[in-house]
Length: 100
Image (cartoon, rainbow, N blue to C red; front, top):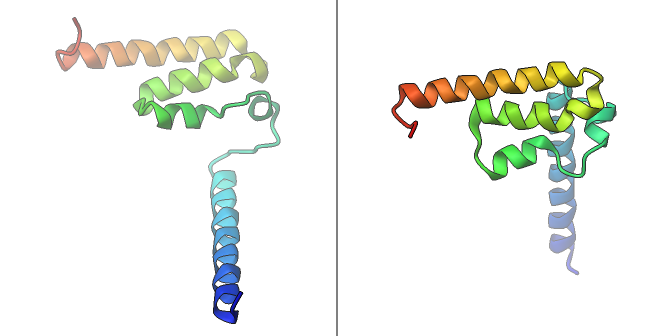
């Protein structure tokens, strides 16, 4: 491996490490703490499901509240929040003429 290749790899690793630290700091500012139990209990992060299926805000919150409800200590409250977002999504769909 040449010095240039080695330098390039070192630079890439440093950039990736810097981006990871920056992302983690931003997540902490937004209240994400991976040490909380409701984050540790799941193989899939709700955000990964939300982004994979392009669910948007309302349906994304439904997924988040339903998947985390068993682990946060307010099971019924979290399910009620999910229902609120479902009702809002239904109302928005009806207003946009998407309801069938």
